[in-house]
Structures are given as C-alpha cells and as structure tokens.
Length: 191
Image (cartoon, rainbow, N blue to C red):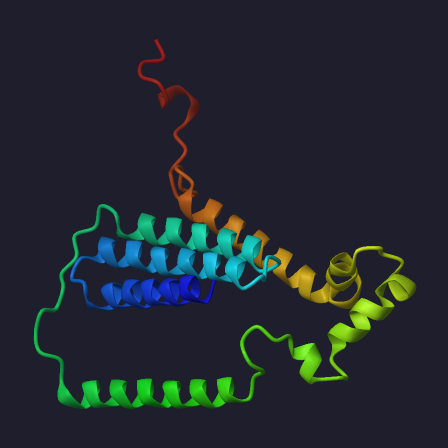
C-alpha cells in the first residue's frame, strides 16, 4: 500500500505543477480537480473515510464553480520572464514550508503504528474503552461523530450545506436582476 500512496502523492504533485505552469486556464482548473480527487483517494487509502464525503462534495462543487467561471471566457496569459525577486521569494517560501513539514513529521510516530500506542493518554483509548458506557452507542465511530465531536460534525454539515447553496446560487439560469415584463408583453402580441 505504501507504494500506492507514494504514487498517488507523485500524481498530485505533478497535477499541481501542471496547474501552476500551464498557460491554459481550463487545463489549470482540470489539473486542480485531479489533484483534489487524488487527495480524496489518498484519504481512503490512509483509512480516513469520515473525511471523504465532505471532501468529495466540496471538491465537486468547487470544480463546478471554477469550470463555470472559466468556460467561455477569453483569457490573456502573461508569457514573460518572471521577476527575480518574486522567484527568490517563492523559493524561500517553499523552503520554509518544506522545513516546517519535515520538522512536524519528525515528531510523529512511525508510519503504520497508531499514535495511541505511543501516547498512553490518547483520547482514542478513552473513546474505545468508554464509548458504550458514556454514550450508549454500540458503534465507537458513531459515538465519536455524534457525541464526543458533535460540534465538529455539525460544522462539516454546515460546510456542505453552504457549498451546495452557494453552487445553486451561482449556477442558476435566471438572474434576479432580469427584468420582469408586464403581463401583456411576455409572449408576443396580446391581440
């Protein structure tokens, strides 16, 4: 499985680079969507299925909105040499990001070993041992989602609802600004 994860990460990096360096805006949006759906598959492979539904909905709606904004528009791209200070600043930011990423990953347990083994006071131990007694839910995942982290679940549902409403508002065919014609002028002659 680790080889598949590495391959998927490579795919996501390549898709992100294509999105950054392509001159066609539509190709950039498609590459961003490919990287996002790669992240969804990565969540599944890393056994985080609770994140997947929210991620898929937000990813699909974002892709629809971006495609709607891009398709049919004539774009002018800048095809010149980027200024050196901007390139240096970008390189420094990427270097800082990589440094912080390596520092944060060095403190994590080895890949494949649950953190609850390394941390004896991890909340997951309490969730597994006490969920039935404290919540009455026979399924520990249900207990975590609906009792221990109910506000988090409510927040995720709110994000999904907001994304759907936003997409409906942006993608509807008839604009609110469209003028309503008087009753006699709508379909031709009233005579």
